[in-house]
Image (tube, rainbow, N blue to C red; front, top):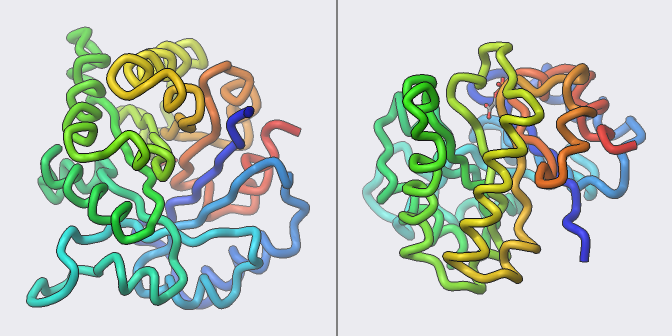
Length: 249
Ligand code: PEP
């Protein structure tokens, strides 16, 4: 079965009631390619609003989730609270959380497992820094990040995972990976999936690209064999997000 094209919009710490309402109204009234699975990730405060406003063909994702079921964890959100709010997805391991909030591979893995066990799907973000790329360590870095998650997941769990390859040097910088750079890493991730998990999981798992995706570069990237969609930051706040959703039309 072909992998369904997947486009996620990560609003990061942007927006307010008015602007988020307007972004969602724009998506609701646009013609979205039905072959694309669309997921938006507003800030936690607006998850309920987003679920109320968005059409049913648009799923909602949290930007983060905690790995404990409930209790004294100030500022965190649990998997069951997200479920209660009809949020079906969680972003895990975004590089801004790995670098600014010092989230480790171990913590990212633990959150991924907790989210899946509680019934959520996960957009698992991985990717290398500029320094690591220049030192030729890209594949080592993403493999290490993936191995940490693989140590906790069952083979069946991978059906609930979309892998977002996001080179840190391309996030929010306007510096997009070339189609060749993206395809090269995506193919390596698919090879890792085949060898470390199974050939079936490798065939079925969406590997999406993130890092300065725009309405200008999305069509070329979408043509690459192993690019199954995008995780979009800045451009997901703009009307051009619709063009990215429709990149395969
Ligand atoms: C992101 O936040 O995941 C991202 C890819 O951001 P941007 O599209 O702004 O580079």
